[in-house]
Length: 336
Image (cartoon, rainbow, N blue to C red):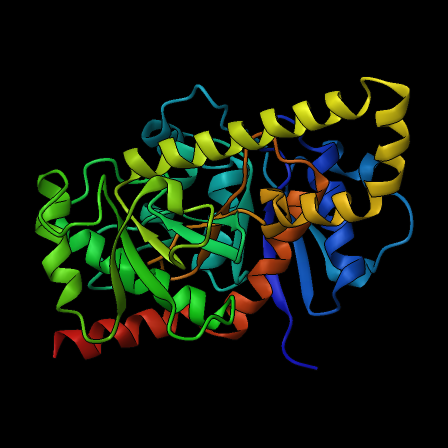
C-alpha cells in the first residue's frame, strides 16, 4: 500500500461544525485506507461526535483552543489567534506533520494563512482558488474563483498552467483544454485584462489553449480549465450554485404537483437521482488553493458531511501525484 496522506481537518470551522465536519471525516476514513485524519480543534467539542466504528489508529486530535469566526479580520486573526484551528492546522503542513489542510471556516483567514504559514512556491506570484464545477461532459476547473480579484495578465497565465497540471494529474484529463472567460469568441473582444492575457496564453506552447469561452458554454463543457480573475470567477460560481438549487427546487415542485406527476416521479427517480448526482458540486470536494508548498482546500462554509468527505479524499490524489512538485517543475521549465 502506498504511503498514507495525512489530512489536517479544521473541526471548528463552518456553519455545521463540529458535527458535520467530524461525520465527513469518519466517512473518509471508512472509505479509504490511504488517508489519515488529524482533527484540529477543541478536544471537548470533538470527542462527543467520535461515535460508531471507525479506524481509530488513523484518526488523532490536535488541540487548538481558539476559533477564527467568519467576521474576524483575516490578517489580524491569523497573527493574534495563534492557537486557532486554522493556524494550528496549517502549521502542521509547514512542520511536515500533515500533507493537506481542509477547512470550511473563514475563507479570508484560510487564504491568508495559506500565504503566511504554508507559503507560496518560489516563483508563484498569486495563489488562486480552483473549484471543480459540473458540466455535461464531466467537470471543469474554474480558476480563480475567489482569491485574487485584481489579478494581472501574468497571474492568469500562471493560473492556466497550474490548472492544466491539476486537471491532467488529479482528474486524469489528457491535454486539458484551457480557455479564458470572455464576452465573445473574437480575440479582439473583452476588457483590458482579457485582451492583454489572450496573446500570452496563445503563445504558451505547454498549454492546450483554445481561446475564449462565453459563460453560457461553461455548463456544456466548452473547456476543461476556465481562466479568469476571482471577481468574475466567484460570480460564475455563485450563479452556478444558485441556478442549480433553483432548478432542483422547481423539478421537485413539479413532480409533487399532482397524482400523475407523483407516479411519474417514482418511475424516473433512479435515473434522475444518478443524473442529479453528476451535477452536484459537493460530489467533487472543495476548492484547492494552488501554488502553495502544501495543499490547502477550502470547502463551503455550509459544507455538510458529504462535501467534507470528498474534500478529504481529493487530497489523496493531489499528494500522490505531487502536484506542488509538478508546479515547481513547470515554473522552472518555462522560466529557462
